[in-house]
Amino acid sequence: MEDTPLPAQPAVEATPRPRALLGWRLLSLFYDLWPAAALWMLASLLFNIGYTVLGHHAERENIPPGSLLSSLLFLACLLVTGLYATLSWRHGGQTLGMRPWRLRLLAADGGRPGWTALWLRYAVGLLSLLVGGLGFWWAWFDRDRRTWHDRASGTRLERMPKR
Image 1: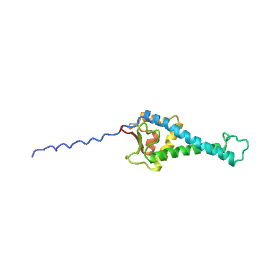
Image 2: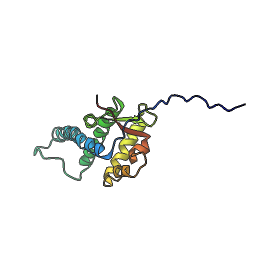
Image 3: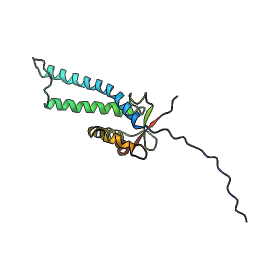
Image 4: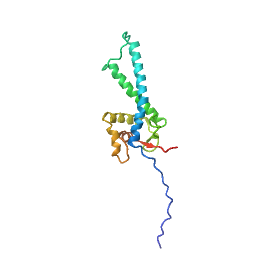
């Protein structure tokens, strides 16, 4: 009996989406600085109004640097930035800064990331920025071009094709 080769199956090539390279990520982050700054100004305004009105300060001075209230303001700014990022990623997979560069956040399996993964991504990304962006630069050496916050949260960024 002669071995006959099986007929060749038609190759179904899945065209992988391009990875989000570091340059696109940094441009996106720069764009996202502006809505974040607007949210910081709003939080600062609310804190200063509260400090002036509720604190009954006749001098109308600013919140003293290094005070407990200034530390709470800093934490509020981190929180509103996290809310902006995680809500944007959860509903649509993009922040405002990601849209012009056609970047979309996905879970590693291609689905929508959960809240825990999104907050972990935000926290590790923030830590990465605090150490000079080391977690972002890591993408140059990573085989999948993923950053620390991609790896830690089980997410990935992909660049969508032009429409």
